[in-house]
Length: 397
Image: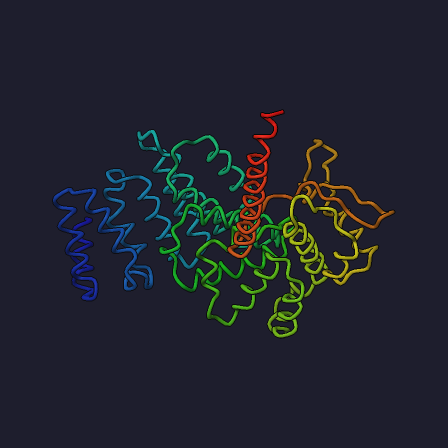
């Protein structure tokens, strides 16, 4: 049956004739590993992506030996086939059938392939608009994932990708940002198409700007995917990230002026204009603190007011927000880690900062840190020479 199907397709599809011939040869020789590799290549061919080619290949060929190959690879093939179903309910039924067959095998490690297939079902439910079912499957998937060890990266990537898309659909920017970065941790950027990288880089950038409690842009700016924005019509968002990362209020305002039409086309940015201004002012404050030597962390409020274009009272509010923690009254754990520690002196109109939340630093910030370390080393060396010069007198005494 399987060989007859392949032979019929070889005759019917001259563009894929050589590939079908290779599949038939490996099948006859029962070289299951080599056949798996050949199938993996075949399913990526543009000619195989048309119509229902993969659906029929799975039903008439792969299903004949599905328990003889790596089950996680089988799950990959099933997921690819499911994407060709025009009807989403039919796709879910197909995948549920695959899960049932996986459970019938005697293999011990079936959790990985089952979880991988379930995440595709969650994705289809999300496409249908059934967020409740998607959330349920994600919750079950998270529990399964946490109970497993030595998990294949593709399974992790699948879970975090679907989770990111769920939070994107709900406009939960911070959760999307976290899950999308975790997805990238289990995915090689080189394996992604240029259009996919551009879309993801743009979505990540917006999420970083709009996400609650995201004040560290260094991790995103250091990731190679962000370079996808450079040289495109949305390069402005890359420069906006840079302005936030360095707390450069003047650059941010200039970008808003120059790219006003592009910004207006993003409703989320327009609706959160005040929130964005507050965030960059906080980052401006953190940059002011970072740029000062550790022994000079008592800062006049007027200095902060000048850099942020705020009144003294607004600066005090900004400081209180940066100093504060938001607590969950149900479990007594902070929902927001404070950004700085210190004391506001309203009499002298200053703030003394004793601690700043660590951040991933960009190249200019690392250079500034190096200069300060060099200056510190110079001071230590001068002190050492002074002590050595005074030592004979101390010994004589």
